[in-house]
Length: 95
Image (cartoon, rainbow, N blue to C red; front, side, top):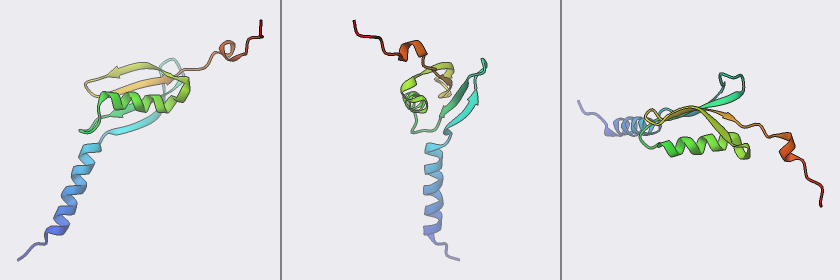
């Protein structure tokens, strides 16, 4: 009986790719004080803590975010996007 290596190679490559990028994601949620937030997971071999910070920054855009909880060891964090202060967005009259 002879086995073809091509299907086995495909399985090994796709499994390896999955394991390298596994546990990476961004999920919408609510933080304990009721604000809308996100859970950022950056596990997997190719991800680092800095990749979590980048994902958090992209999720909230130019508003910025506050870290509600974070765990560098597990590479996961819960964030809440900052709400802009209306007084800060008003233009001041020229003097």
